[in-house]
Amino acid sequence: MKNIKILTLIITTFILSSIGIFLTSCNNNGISFQSFFSQSSGGNNQPSNPYWARLIDTNNATDWYNGAIFDGNNYYIAGWQRDSTKKLALISLNLDGNLNLAKYWTVNGYTDVGLNDIFIFDNDNLLVSGWLAFFNVGFVGNYNKNTNNLVIKKVFNIPNLSSICDNNFIYLASEDNNNYSDGIGGYVLKLNKNDFSIVSTKQVVQSGNFDFGLLDITLQAKINPDYIALHDYRTNRVVVLNSSDLSLVKAYDTSVDQNPLIDENRNLYLFDNVNNNLVVSKIDLATNNVISKQYGTVSNAYPYSSSAFIFNSTGQTTHLVVGYTIDNSINNQGQDVEFLKLDKNLNVIWSVIVGTTGNDKIDLRTMFGMPDGGLFAARYINGGDYGYAVRLGPNGELPTSCLF
Image (tube, rainbow, N blue to C red; front, side, top):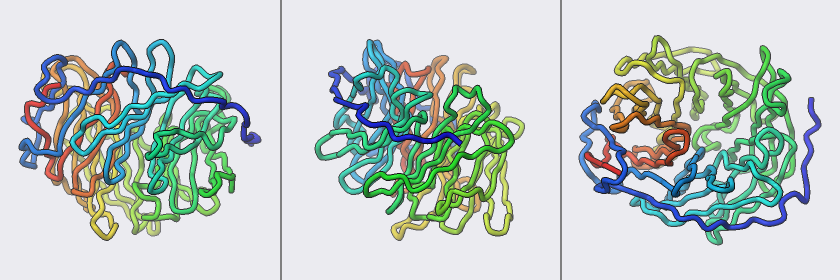
């Protein structure tokens, strides 16, 4: 196993780069990006605030977003932006989907930088993680919502870190160090939340390469603090670890990208593509009992999906929201996203397709289940030509004829 080192004195200054950012919304006909609710089933889909969609565009630049979170007051999106230089990027939107702020940072000595994940750390801070050199240097830090400062707490000699935390610990997962060339897998790190010191590390290798691309412990880690669920985005394998010692519990092979969910009753929710249809499985980790359902409402599902829990007022999970990319259902071109809301017996409450009028490819990675029963999702279009953010209501509501 590689000796993981904490790299010091690497970051000297964060430089705020001044970039013009444009958020376009409904009734702006400058860019064709439309939500098609004629394709939806269930839900009333009537125009209603605070449900909205936004296109995020910095002129003649790449806008690439990986993580999204809602802290109860504002929405946050994290990733990277590139024009003449590549920068860490963090955007905040208010409840109406309007821009609070957009922050961009360059890092002295590094040219390939990016934020991978964003998560609630405490009342004043967000946990952020990413890379300063994609295959060599990963980092974890805090973004202070009061000062709008980003502080890197630890830098490691392992790449591209994903992150999540509970009340006491931070969990990090990395990819392979050597550009996937040595057959050696990624790492999992457990840190003390109070000082970011290392508690334990683990390299997980099973049946050849295992390079972590996504780490998730459900929406709130305190829901079930016993497990960590990880997804390898190269092989689409899902691994469940004990959070106490990072030992292996179970591993599953799938065929889609996903962020696996574990609820308070130790049920694991997995997603797969069978004959171009989405399949959702509910697996009891204690008994191995499995319930699976196939959703055949759309065809040609791409291997990109995301999901999140919805909670009631006492903090218990009540529903799942699921999103996955599909062939364009409107004009037979491009790539759309279908969002579904499921109960915990895997029955569909509603489904909504969000797409464009053109030959555009919409990607999906991160979703957030909202307190009202809706969802928030953000990512990019056409490989970063634009970023986007969408907020659906509890019944799938989003203003119809929403043309960016």
